[in-house]
Image (cartoon, rainbow, N blue to C red; front, side):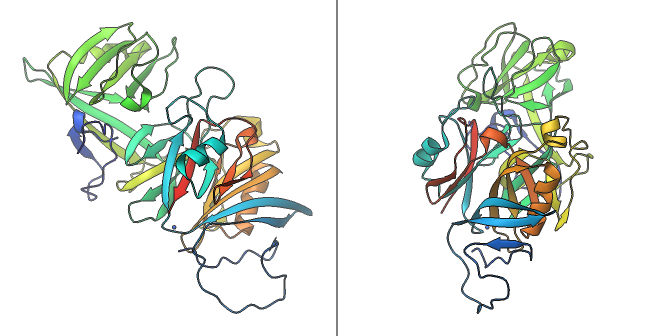
Length: 386
């Protein structure tokens, strides 16, 4: 394993929910024909009452506008269907964390066959960092403590849950061999200067932290190389940096140059129950959850959402769902409340569905063409290749 793959998501020992590894080596869907509900009419599908013989499975990305009838209103929903088995990826802005780029640029750079805007991000000032959880190529690249996430396993199957990631570890004193515990509850997130946080920074963050406050512990190859404070320290390409701020600062006292460091990762849902995400290679957080097991399952407050634009107001929406055959549906709608958005996904036949960053961020790509154009540059995009 490449030592640069810090904070790699575990893929072995599924019988155990915990996996420990040296810190320098750490852990860091053949689309079948889809039949919409009775209140959904696809301009490309037969009108109600028309019988069509069964055909071969759809094997490529397709797009259409669905007219979904709900509460006396017609919602025009732009959709992109992604066959099961296409490869998922997450890209950041200009291919660097904390940057933005147009969706058109991302499509050209990546050669994406299909794409949707990703998780929420800082779009109104400051560094445009993501807010939701992101796992890419098996590496944990960002974490959050709210919402829902969709994940893609090694075999191409998609899963959805209220993912929470716990990062804990041990540090063994080089002189006394005494062992102490440590933890981090965010990855690659800039902490508030006047707040308290324990954050792990990987090389994805950049060459350095980008701020100069808190106490920092630099780890390379599973060994502590530096313990310092108030400095914008460099992030080693074969390691990571732990930063402790506010009331978490004393945790830095447990680390000394030369100490051995190990780490473990645990996946749970929002209630703390273990979930089997050990072999998830790509994941994207967002939320709230819209549909679970074919039924509306909307509870944004329980997932940590407090904003009126999520709880009550109408807005442009984007989302992602899993269809009965395991294929993926990406969609946007010009305006809907979250309750309406959930009902729309149920009517479109989704087994599982969740909301993504909407509003001006809403965007879709199909076969290299933008079919819903975002109103701003994006921090992150979920895209699919053959």
